[in-house]
Image (cartoon, rainbow, N blue to C red):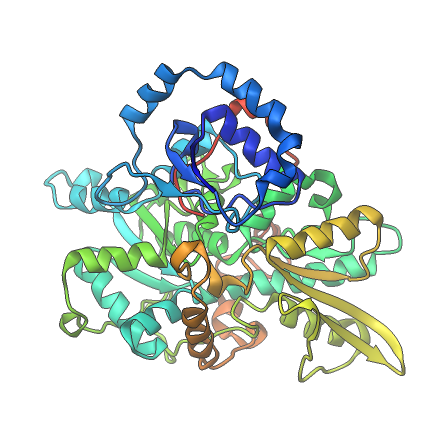
Length: 504
C-alpha cells in the first residue's frame, strides 16, 4: 500500500474507522495528526473504502497544503535522544487501545515520558541548587527482566543485577522490582472476585469480572465500550500503580522525603503503561506529584545503555533494592501464569478454595479459537462450578465484546490483555521487523521467565507486614483507597483528539 500523509482530522477519522470495523491501527510512532508521512499496511482498506470515503473528503476540505507544510516544518520529538523528525510506519496490527486518540492534555503529559526527561532530571541533580535535586527511583516490571536476560545472555538474577548496576552508575538512587506490588494487586483482585460472585444473583454487573492490569484494554473499555464493560472491570489497581503508591507514600516517608522530592520511573514492556501513568486519579494534587512520573519501555532502557557506550563486562553487578532495606531473601520470584502476572490462575485457585472448599494444584487450559483464547473450568461430580477465560489480543477481545453485546459470556472471570501472547510480548520490548512480534525473542523470554521460582502472594510475609505498617490492615479504608481505583465512560469529539507521538 502506498504511503500517505495523514492530517489531524484524517488521523482521527481513520482511527474511528478502524474501531468501527474491528480493525487495528497499530504502532503510532509519530503523530500522524501533525502531518507526518505514514505507511499503512497489513489490512486491505480497499474493501471498506466506500464506508470511509465521505469522511476522508470532508477532512480534505478542512486541511490546506500550506497548513500541513507548516506543521511538518515544526516537527515533533518522539522520545528518542536524537529528536529527529522522520517518517515512521504505522502498522494496522499493533494498536493496543483501538481508538488510539488522546486529548491534547494527555498528549502533553505523554510527551514527557521519554529518555530526554530522564536526562533532564539527572542533569538538574548535578547542578549546585540542591533544592531542585530529585531522588530517582526506578521500578522494573518482572516481565521486563527476561528481555534484559536474553539481550545480556545472562539468567534473570544476573541480568537484574547488571541492569541495577548500570542505572545506579548514571545517577539512579534506588532500583526496585515490582513483584511485591503485583502481590497486592492479585490479593485484592481475589477478594473482589469472591465478593462479586456471591452477589451475582442480585447484581447484573457482578460477573463476569474483567481483570484491570492492562491499560490498553482499560482505555479501549472506557473510550469505546463504555457502560457495557466498565462496571465489570475489577477495581484493584494495576501492579504499576500500586508500586507508584508504595514508592510515593510508604517509601518516601521511610526515607523522610516528600513525594515531590522523588522522581519515580517504571520500566515496562508496554507503551500503554505511559497512558496509565498520566491518569488523573494517580495524581497527588496536594503534593503536585504523580505516583509514577515517567514510564520507559525495556527497549528505551536498552537504547539508553547502548548510547552510554558501556560494555556489559564493565558494569558492576548490584543487587536490587527493597522497600524495607536489607532483607533475608533477596531472590527474585514470579507469580503463576504464562508470562504475565497470572491473575487468572491465582484467582481461580483462591475462588475454588474459598467458595467450594476445593484445592486446585494444577490448572489445565483448554485452547478454543487460538492459543490466545483459552478457558479453565472447575468441575465437581459433572457440574461446572467455575468457568474462566484468558483472552489476549484485540481480535479475541472483539469476539468477547460481540458475545457481551448478545449476553452470551459464560465466564465468571476473564483475564484480558491487549498484547497477543501476554505482557512478555509487549511492543516496548518484543517488536521485530515490520512491527510484528519477534517470536524467537518472545520464546526465549518465556523460557527465561518460567525459570524463576513461584511465590504465592498469600505466603509473602513482606506483603502482610505492609498491610499492617502501611495500610492499617487488609480490610481498612486506607487499603481500599490506596489499592483500588474506578473507571469512567468517556466520549470525545473527533475534533478534540490527537494521535500521541509515542510508539504502540
